[in-house]
Image (cartoon, rainbow, N blue to C red):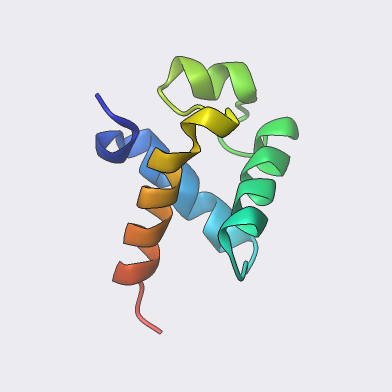
Length: 77
């Protein structure tokens, strides 16, 4: 399963976007790292997210960026 098709990844991105209004991808990435570091999503940290197919490694960020763009495009203004 790719991150884009992972419902947990989509839920995680939505959670982060609802927590904080961000203006760009770096700010969203920072928010996702903050959320993971403080275990705010389901009580999960980095390792639990990775175990569920959500990697915040900089080399794995493209799928999360695609999810974010999709979520933002489908969100009414």
